View 1 (cartoon, rainbow, N blue to C red):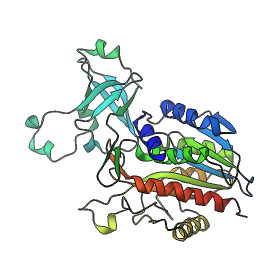
View 2 (cartoon, one colour):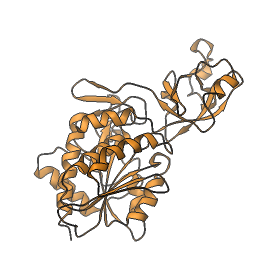
View 3 (cartoon, helix red, strand yellow):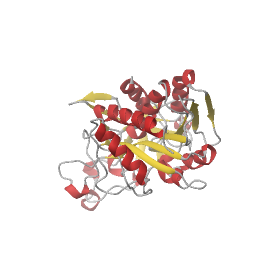
View 4 (cartoon, rainbow, N blue to C red):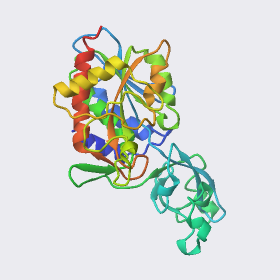
Length: 342
């Protein structure tokens, strides 16, 4: 069920501030199992479920619903779409990509001046964002404007495919894997009372998590995420953050958070005791909702379990399906341990 849920989630559109489709699907999946369910002002979906015991500490689990993408900025007289990025995207991955534009999902393709017209100097540099356009097949501005408007979301369009030795290719694995794990946990009997927060706008500054943490006021928080793998053949060993297929990533630190030492050691020992392979970040980079949660109110003890994702923030991210299953297993173990924490 975990993998089927992940595939469905990855196919849904949901750039930052346009998470509606993802949120609606998650609500449908968890509503029969939840004790309470609400959507806050920011758009976070906050779900509570009672467990076997209340728990001596309040526990919050978090995963973000949003994905990186694009947003309509303007329409040219010729009917082409100019856009801005939403979240961190390398402009080099945009050329020739298929996209879906607006609430109706109008098909389009990201275009750039043909290689034959490129100067020697231009060939050496990454094109600027203003040089790209999206072609939706409109004849002119009026025809395009009847279909899309400034502020409309633009998502990458691509198939969700299993390939190779247990790998999955899809957009938005970051962080639909965390959402999928939380959905599966909500469906199961829990060892303690838990609050699950499916956050918004993580990719543009962990904005949803900040307000949600103030609302929930947890003592402990477990963030479930996707993180960049950087395990390509030409990557120096000291630049490889983590590797696809080598188990869940348990970070002790990233660019936004120094994780709680007690919880880091707990996750590490649980993995080792139960035969779950694990790894940590070899290169300190990035940041997650944990940074915002940790700083809320009087402070929160935070930990994270991440999936190593190759080609992060592109239309063709890659993850190991076995890594995903092991993340769910480790999260279950963490909940059982948290139920008895003083």
